[in-house]
Image (tube, rainbow, N blue to C red; front, side, top):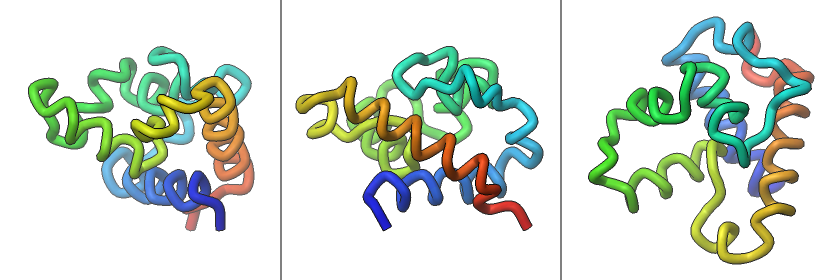
Length: 107
């Protein structure tokens, strides 16, 4: 299991538990984790910021926020952002598309 796969599956479990029916909000052909409007949280919650609030993290906790978001596959880690973020965002987006299309987490 890849690092992105494990993180995305964790994000799917979070959404399944906290936002039933979230898959109905996803426009798979528009999904882009580098775009705050077209990322998973942006599409599911209407905005990336609203999605962030679903974790109970305030904007004052920015460092904690990125760590939490990246651990759920909603964003990149600090290291990935500092490396080739375009490549990493593409890989993360592809993993979300793959898992959604395969029905990961669906019972």
